Each structure stands twice: as C-alpha cells, then as structure tokens.
Length: 124
Image (cartoon, rainbow, N blue to C red; front, top):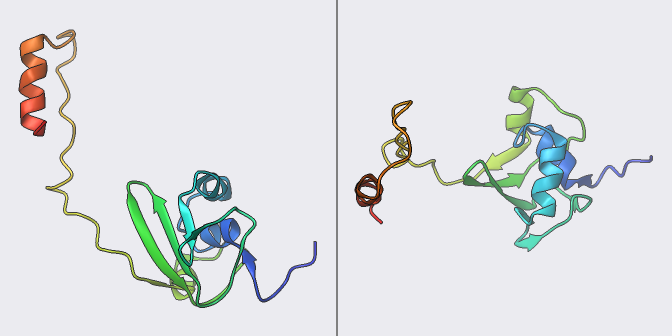
C-alpha cells in the first residue's frame, strides 16, 4: 500500500501519538462518532494533515489536539508529545469525580430505604 506523505489515517494517527491504547480502539471511537476533525465527524480512513484540529471523546473526557506532525507508526511518548499541541481542558479534580460507594460483601441487595439514602447522597 502506497502511503501519501501529506495525510495519515485518523485512526492510525490517534493510536500513533498515544491518545488511545490500540488502533482498534481508535477505529471504534471513529465508528461511534467520538472523533471529529475540524468539527466534522469522520470515519477511520479520513486523512489528517498538519494544522487539523482533532477532538476525541475517550475515557470520560474530551481531548482537543492540533496536529503538528504526521506519524503513521507508533512512536515513543517523548516523540508523540511533539506531534500535537494539546488544547484540552484540564481534567476535573478527583474530589469532583466521586467513587461509587460499594456495599459490604454479603449484605445482600439494598432495601428501599438504602436505595433512597444512596440517591440522596448522589444528589438525585
């Protein structure tokens, strides 16, 4: 397969610069509509060029990056950081992301009163 030096597949680029763990995860994100290039939803085979803005919703947060260099093969973390400019909002603090409470093992299903108390704590 001949490669065009001016563009790279968006799923391959997202994987190459370590925004997703695997290329199949990047392709799945494209299929699910979680990847936008310059504001448009794209398929996995869509090409990206330097200067394009890529938005990726992954792992509960949105990543907004601007392509500064094209790579088609996975590279090290130091090189990957040079391939894009990260304009993502900072992740929310850990206090905001409250862990879901876990019941003690063997206590059975929550009663109606327990469920109402849990919903009140969650603010519903």
